[in-house]
Length: 122
Image (cartoon, rainbow, N blue to C red; front, side):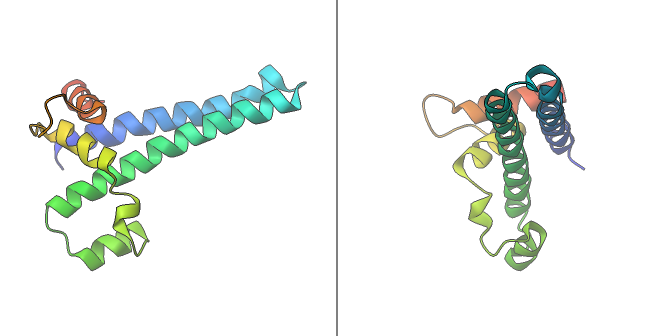
């Protein structure tokens, strides 16, 4: 297993778990205000979802670059459309993880984040 992929999974799982824990903990902080609780829980859950989506897309982009059969990739993603997950951000993130040089003059944000995740190992 490439170390950058292990770092990717570790990094995003930590973030996802932190957002999910926050969603659970908000009950104790805002249990008396239903509107405040609903709003903050939704923020935490969508933040967790965004990290999960980026994690899946980045991993899928890596498999795609390794020439995994398209049908197998669709089955693994449980989706007929891999582009649903393999977004521009996911590809940029993968570029950062793998040390690819961006084509653009300014390095995209997710490429920078990917570089930090690969360097720090989490």
